[in-house]
Amino acid sequence: MEKEKQKLSFFSKIKTSVLDFDGYQNLAAEKVSSTIGYIALIILIFSIVISITYVCEFWSTINKAKEYINTEISEIKYENYELDITPNNGEETIEINTENGGQPVVIVNTKADTEEEINECINNIKSQKNGILILKDKIIIKSEASDDTIEYTYKQISEEYNINKIDKEELINILSGREMAIALCILAAILVLYMFILYVSSILIDIFLLSILTYIVSRISGLRLKYSAIYNIATYSLTLPLILNIIYFVVNSLTGFTIEYFRVMYNAVASIYIITAILMIKSDVIKKQYELNKIIEEQERVKAELKRKEEEKREQEEQERREREKEKEREKKKKQEEKKDKGKIGKEPEGDNA
Image: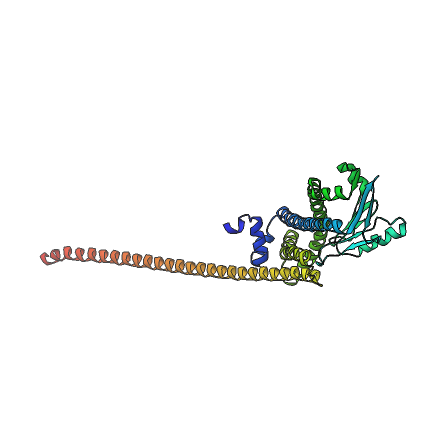
């Protein structure tokens, strides 16, 4: 009992929710506020890992960009919030693809002036899983974590970092200097916040749908659970899918390896955990009910045995009482007979003398 009441730590909850189906009964009894804190911390860790992965990818892209600028770009000019990049081959559009499918595609077109040309570039970057589009007056970043793009104008960047004029040599120095390190830290912080908000909303929907599944399975199995218990079971069932999601994201980013039906597997694993946990709780309830019935039967047997012994004791006491009364009666009769005999003995001499 003491063990059940003991408050579980964050890592104990992870271990229990992944490896111990029997422990779901204890997890179901947790306070909802504790469960919310648990899943929020999981999402925060998830967001940090994803953000670090993105920043590492971005840093790798920057290093490749520096190398590409040195070898493939003849001129770079930035002035009045506009960027002009001229490649050695004279083409207007530069597209840099890496061998690793997880790395972002970099598309550069600073010559696009018409709205049609700009939209074509934007549609091109949106079709990529991860990509960076560099235009004349802005930079657009596309991530597979979201269907939306993140856009930064050069005016915003210039005003924030006090950059007014740049050439090729200065750009390489900026990409290698302290300013870039600060920019990467800011990008990481923004990504953590963005990812946290994005995944909170997504996982809340998952929890809601899994709660419905938990309710249905519990009713079919004959369990009547409180909503807090249903919510807790649904939430903790997402632990392993989220861990697998983090691992898959990192592997996908580093190697480009993809699993086509990963989302289906994500939901399937959570559903299996819910069904198994409910069945284990049901089994435990049946076991406890059986043990309770055995205890009640034993109590009834003990009560019957005590009652029988009390009746036997009363009967024995009653018998002993009757024996004592009979003994007293015999003693009384004996004394009366002795009195009569003495009386007879005292009268006999008087009769002889007469």
